[in-house]
Length: 454
Ligand code: UDX
Image (cartoon, rainbow, N blue to C red):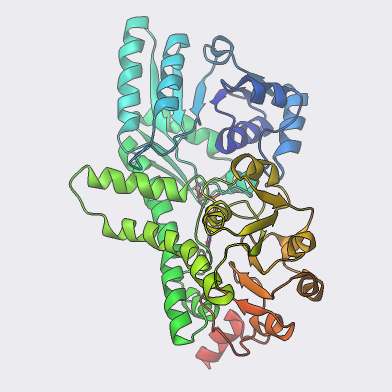
């Protein structure tokens, strides 16, 4: 049992805190926003993350997970302090470190014994060193000994608890081998694959990993645009590519591009770090450009199919940046809603869990109770987030409810042949514009592998 404090109760902090408490550690969670802490004390979560609420409630009830806004309660007795505060994008894409600075200052003020400070927030390469420097200077004056370890997180929202408990690897960066080893000990129960590096390298691993995954998505989206022009089907192209173990099948789903709190922010921050060091990170810039264009192309397509969009009714299915989360940060749906509103379109929308968050940022959108209400009188429907409940819609019912029968499938969820058989003017991303391409009866990857062996 170790005494752990976690600063920040966002997706990263809360998952870290709950999972460590679940192992039997004594965890204090601190956030400066009183409303969030008050909610957590009542057993309510400030965010939606599958499996997390039950884990938080159970560990809070057992007394292993405590919530506070008081640094004097959270810091002095902690053996490990995990910093998981936000690092939003600044004006030039650089990471804004104001929350990190406040956290570090507050930690410094309250430290009173040997402590390992573990940074889980994504910070510009070099921040670990400067944080360590600030704390070392403070510590010397106070006669307190401590170390700084960088511990980037690789958990996906929507499956964050699973990812935390089943990591592919754990990366730890530190100048102090003993401190890194102490943190490694906390994680050994999850994996033996623990990599210990210097601080800067650990921070860079996080950026490089996220930029690479974002690049895979933008790559397949560029291929999708080319497929559309040439009459090829990107879904099958990605399947064929992904079967090559050197490429891998993950993150090759063409669609409306990536959103969320990590990919856009981290690619921009890495670009900024390269630029201010005199480099020209063209590949990183292209990753962001392609992602933006994926959204713009929807407007172009709708204009082609419906003419002027002024006064047209467009239905949006899904608002969160991906399924199983209520997070709308950098979500394709929010970008599209703004672009469509600028065109003068009337918008109707539904999302299983993200409507409350979306209502805060979108004006003039009619929020509906389900997909069928969205379809009522719509000239076009756009599937934006591939929630399970959209995968088996009663399509004849959707068709009947709509005024015009345009259906843009922004995540390639539906079978083009089936949708066209229902009568829709159906468009996927990177799929032949007409014809009878079907998802069923395709060779599986396994069958393809056997066929090639034969
Ligand atoms: C990501 C990383 O996966 C995680 O390791 C990191 O710590 C935080 O950022 P997350 O943002 O939660 O996690 O979501 P992820 O599942 O990676 O998806 C990101 C975005 O990419 C979503 O908008 C998703 O719709 C999109 N995406 C993903 C695609 O468009 N195509 C794909 O093939 C995969």
